[in-house]
Amino acid sequence: MKKILLLFIVASLTLVSCKNPSKSQHAASENTVEITHSLGKTHVPLNPERIVALDFATIENLNQIGVSIIGMPKLAVPAHLKDFESNDEITNVGSLVEVNLELINELQPDLIIIGGRLRDSYKSLSRIAPTIITNFDTSDPVGALRKDLENLGEIFDKEGEYGDLLIELEHKIDEAQKTIQDSDKKALVVLHNRGRFSAYGSGSRFGIIHDVLGVQEAAEGLDTHLHGTRASSEFIKETNPDILFVVDRSAAIGEQAIDVEIIENELIQRTNAYQNGKIIYLNSEAWYLSGTGGIESINMMVDEIWQAYQN
Image 1 (cartoon, rainbow, N blue to C red):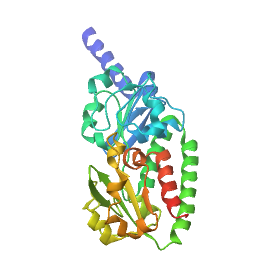
Image 2 (cartoon, rainbow, N blue to C red):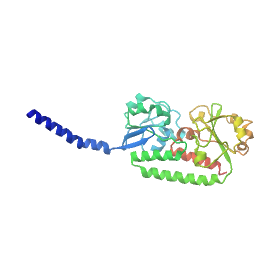
Image 3 (tube, rainbow, N blue to C red):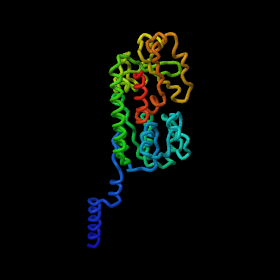
Image 4 (cartoon, helix red, strand yellow):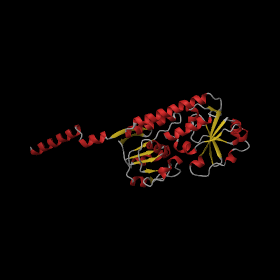
């Protein structure tokens, strides 16, 4: 009889426990937020203190609200983020495409944020700490930025600050569009890497030029793949853009920069862009490395295109 009574008491306590979670369980729930991203849903601690940011755009966005990080890739860091590279309190954990998992684990992060280049490492990083991936949408780059800032705003309770930054950016875009829509100049954007060109248009990684700012395309129907459409000096001459925007991948990743004399060869000199002094060498670090979702870089990018249409 005593044994039966004991079992009944244990069962009752277990049932009560299931129906009434402990204070610690409530605290855990109240101190996290569920973030939805392209690789799933992740429960992230509110106001995490130990953050590893594996994407330059994220570092920009966190810096806007004064949030510190403890780890980042320190290979080919853009010039406007050099203070982070030289900060000895921030551990170098690799590059944008390959990171040291063991070192990241030793840092004991509360949150890891990755960019698309580390997509395949998501599961491994998630075993170390809650991990989220930034948004990347070539069809709506500003919308992707908005989602990233909304997520960060929710995590750090900074929705208002990020909202103000977005309003400022959208106002700048509106003003740039007004200038650009009054022009009939057509543009072509090319990526140069180790002597080779790739051309990009609407819907591509550099599609913000056409899809957001409204620049007319000098060549339509280009491949939207990240590697673009293979191009050549002959292709550029035949396309004959009024403005030629050039992104130097080699310089962006710390290799030998473009030799302008090689770029502006005899064929390129026959284009309207060359003859009108409209070959524009863009800030390659922003366009190639951090402009996939960094609000500072996207502001730089809008400024560069807008400037090309102001004179």
